[in-house]
Length: 423
Image 1: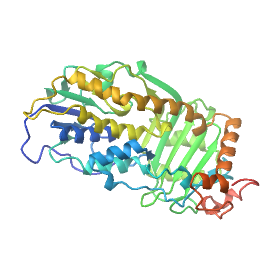
Image 2: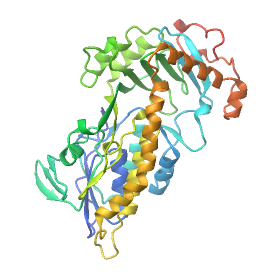
Image 3: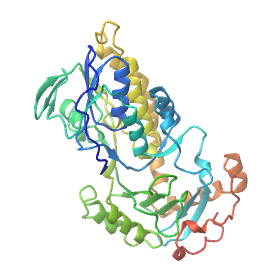
């Protein structure tokens, strides 16, 4: 985890308004979006965060259109810009360091989505957080009840609304809804990310390298105006992964799983060891029949977690948090919504279709994202090869570079030239 040395807000900077009180647990994308939205809707909002400071870094995310629209409604869209240059190249590399594919980065652009790192979104939301919102770092609930009663180390308080936005390992969900094992659907995959102190090999800004072997991938992004980011995904049942502890000792796990890779990987692993990791966890989805109980509601990965394979996790967290305030508007006289349970039910009905679609897409995409055998790996390589043909590239609006352009700079000298027929 990477944090910034930023003092916690100890309270509002102006006289608090009257009105219902909301506690948001978690200062990530979903939590900060909900805090701003609820404040605008007339709530007095407090955010508590277990970490001692605001987290930065994280892995690459693509903010889908619904997330961009929510950012506009929250007024933070001006702080967001794409980190992936439109004329960049996505280069596929195998475990021996050989180039297997080259595709224009523009092929994944749709003119609406934004290529970011997770920290970009959190920084924009933090900067846009209203001054009246109180934020307490190094603070987490010891107990939560569905009537809004929350116990902390320093005492017990009661809230008109409690928002659990504390991620896939949500303590709010466990305290109010039950153990994680009842709702988690594991993919038996591991994801580990890091922000590197420098680029490995001869990479330059704009390069995007994807290293792929059956059951193991690594994505390295040399993004515009940001330190390079790498994230690894691998199958937890690989022989190399047996006996490792990726959550507790991620650097050791990476050495065990990727230690036989050639090309860029040895230097990447050295840089990860130098910088440390920003995120390490197993990959899984959360399935709940209801996202609210009494005065407690779950949001983002705490409620629905579609996984990074969906390409919509950050967008759904942002749009879900933004929508919460629209469904829970405070009356002009300062009284809360007449029926909080009904408002939460309406909010959930609005959010369910998108999260369901994203989870389904993730279950399908995981096989392409992390191929489990050499057959799927080969099919994936062929698909990328076809996508790089000039005609196909033009159809998808990515004809900014011609096939055969010199992009060998994206791999090390040991990688060798692209294989015959590779794009």
